[in-house]
Length: 451
Image (cartoon, rainbow, N blue to C red):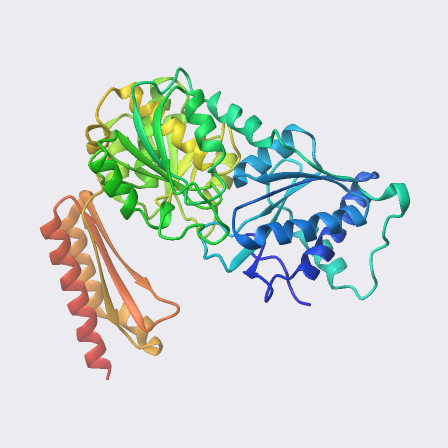
């Protein structure tokens, strides 16, 4: 057996890549390593999303942990961020999340978090992999040393109360439509919004094990957009299947991405003296409109190369409180170590109420600049030559001069296709389209000359 853990746990098609036998052995290994580290039997919590395989894998994980002596608390269907919160609050040695986030129902994943609710170290993961792949079985507990398995029925309520308490005041006077993606937010979302006196309706909150993320949630916003506009709601909120992501729509049904949510919340936090260094964090390639909005409001948007460093890590290293990505990953460090969709939703809704404007009016200030992307077919073996060619460099330089400080242009190299992508953005859509076309033409010309 090779490497089990990827960048976000053990992921794959259930009963092909992830089997009950594998998960059972992983549970035993986790109990063994934790006991060796702490000198006592471990306490582990398990939370899961609503896909049909999650119950089966929960049983396998719980059996493996228990057979090796660990006490196991079953949190049930609960958002991924809630698992980390409950585990740390109640002193668990580790927690296990069974969820494949936004992926189709045939997939699932096992994510193991440490006692602080953060990703396991590589050293810990390697110890688990070694035990799981060992031909020598793990010594099982006997008699009264077998670990107890119990249900933690108040987990969703405790987490919902925590999220509610992050908001100053309430959300009264707002009409909200929420899309739960038939996922793990379907229990907590109503509790949170009821506790904040919001007027709300919820759609896609009837999970049947097969409909998680199916034509709903953050990956498919069309139905939410239409329903918000038709129902005259003030705002729409969408989650993904495991409650990590949050996107929104205004009252017209226009989409509000994660960067715009983050920027609006940054303005609110800064007004309350809650934005350290007057700075929030986004991915470096984020739309220039976000940077412009920050500057206009006397705050700063710090761009991070997410290929080299995660936004969460960068925030922790530099003492920042807020960061986000266009996808809907938004982190409020005061309340959570990682992205939390329901936390993001209430913070965003609270900011909207604070500003006292229609959602579209409040977000009209957070404008994404026009952007265009043109793909040009370029054989893999000449990509570097094309990038270094005089015609390409000349077109790039001309574009940069034309767009000035209010725009930018760059070329992306595809690793999977024979393609170079020209990306341009700026205040003026006509200029953006023009320079992108000129660079694409220059690249095509070089390719023709190389043939």
